Image (cartoon, rainbow, N blue to C red; front, side):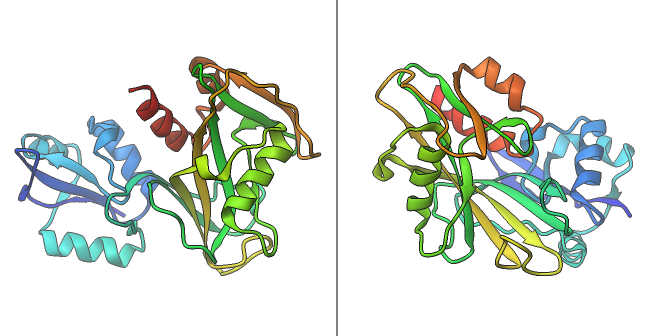
Amino acid sequence: MAIWIDPPGWHAHDRIWSHLISDTSHEELQAFAALAGVPARGFDGDHFDVPQEWYAAVVAAGARPTGGKELARLLRDSGLRFQKRRGERPLAAYRNVLPQLEVEHSVHLVASSLPTPDEPTAAVVVFVGDAGGALLLVRTVVRDAWAAPAGGREPGETVLECATRETWEETGLRVDAGTLVPCGYERVTLDAGASGRWPNRRNYVACFVTVLEEVRPHVAPRGKDVDAAEWVLWPEAERRCRDEFWWPLFAHVHDRARA
């Protein structure tokens, strides 16, 4: 169990960088980075980028120096490699955070404008905003928690059909599939293979964002899985949802929208 860092040698943004990894867990890496004062924005899925001028301080805080090739081998052998496509941004990695999934699993949270692979996409999430900047949240019955409209894909249903159906059932809104823009995904990997409603070892939850032309249209749940739907402003959305594992993607999407 160790934290490792390679020597500065990676050039980007007019600086020289090191890579900081854990050979044990993402949680260990995140905890060490926080204690060492490495900004959260330096996280890139399976490592932190550390500028050259911080290298000595991070080593003094307990990171073990090693060469770049050896660091890459340690990361690969640890099983913690965070796969992503060009242009995607890793936001977070978790172990065993889905409350209704009793088997061992990992969840990778990714910001992306690319669609998810069709066959392994098992569910969707839809982030809905209105013309006045309000955000739509629903309260799920099973978890008694607030979230964006979401749900599992039914047999024979396309990903977009699932997105529009779930939004209708949970909020009463008829959203145009053509306005749904991919904004990221949750990648759910089951250690022991398919389980329950997760049909593959690696599954995707596709996330979309849409902004309505109206201001706070009427919303009301149509199904039994949700018992409330409300328009809220950013501070209230943050208060209700900031501790949820998917929050970094929600915040990333709406921070960009407000910029």
